[in-house]
Image (cartoon, rainbow, N blue to C red; front, side, top):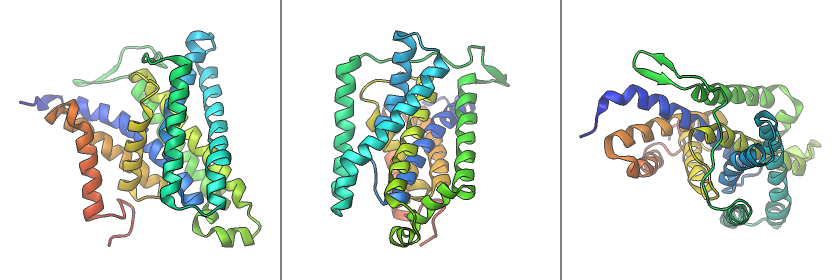
Amino acid sequence: MADWSYIPQVLVSGLGIGCVYGLIGIGFCVIYNASGIVNFAQGAFVMLGGMITQVLFSRSGVPLPVAALIAIAAVAVLGVAIERVVVRPLWNRKATMFVMILATLAAQIVIERLTLIAVGDQPKTLPVFTDRPPLMIGSVAIGYQLIWIVGGSLAIVGLLAAFFSLTKTGKAMRACSINREAAALQGIPVSRMLALAFALSAALGAIAGILITPTQYTAFNVGVPFAISGFIAAIVGGFGRPFGAFLGGLLLGLLQALAIVGFGAGLKNVAALSVLLLFLFIRPSGILGAAK
């Protein structure tokens, strides 16, 4: 029988992983809004963020903050490369959404295989950013890494909101999401906005990977599960709505944590897919979408 006395602690843990799912979901939305493309290489960005940081830190002796910044920049460049080499030719040929999804999924697999060859199949982790005993609130222990995850995620969400509402580039990206043809007629460089969307989405994935790696192992094959969870978060929040994707990620993380307590870790993915099916049947427009 499940021991429900651990619920407060479990919910705290679910909040942390939910923030990571939310950041990944936002990455999906950024690209979708700029191009109408669903990028299933998003999970590779998460994996590479943690993996590159770990390799630079443990093998090359690069300080952790510097290693993290290099990893974010490198993954952002990779995002632009995928857009130029994989997505742009198909986009120019007006390929279908199904073809785009297969192409980005293929890119995900290639990145996984190259990572396996480069660093091996052994799981890797990072040290926590703040090595102190956890804060205790009653019987609930709150690790400092969780504070980094939640605080960092909220800061990123706030910065993204300011970027899209206050800067010319952010407004141009929003215009592309509404009507690419009309945006092009107004002189907005749509192709440049697409490349920027991939760079921003890749950077978000890398940040999510860096934040979560100190709390769990990373490996060459963790990208697909993260991509699926982020995609579910985006669907639950209302696909194309970044803040909704973050809320969807929080909901998904909390429900997965409860499912682990009630049914065991083996069924947490069943809980995630059940949430997806429930929203598709009852509210396909998501949390922040208009009710049907």
